[in-house]
Length: 181
Image (tube, rainbow, N blue to C red):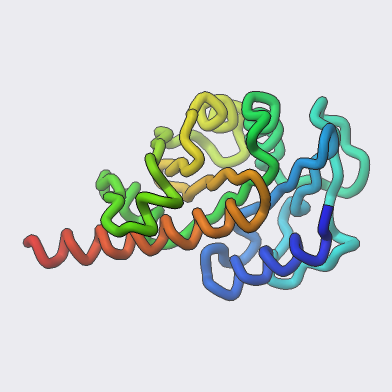
């Protein structure tokens, strides 16, 4: 696992305001081992030594993994094609979920990187129910009602591109809604 890339992605998420405060989390799977952001961490200030480690069975090897660890582990157990997960609180994507508007895929980039967006009803953050309902989805991009987004990738770059592309589509959807009033 490339720890420097992991930290770089966390900083980019923070700098682009896809996460604020201690919101959001990131993980990478390497065979049976999962590297995760620690619970309560501020992604923009994370250091390599802070990265928590678990196995796919949920045994903690190092640190205090994110409170959303069940969400990450359940997805990895179901989806062998997923090796990275990024959960953000991207503001426009989250806002559209709050007002019950689906994000439209409006550009060529959106069609290439997102394909289809899944939706999960509101469940308490960190809950097993939220993890179960999210893991049931087959899409690589999932909106969590009134909460945020989960982007799955074959690697960290793939998941990160989906985060950026999704928020761009959300902004375009919001602008389209404003113009069509």
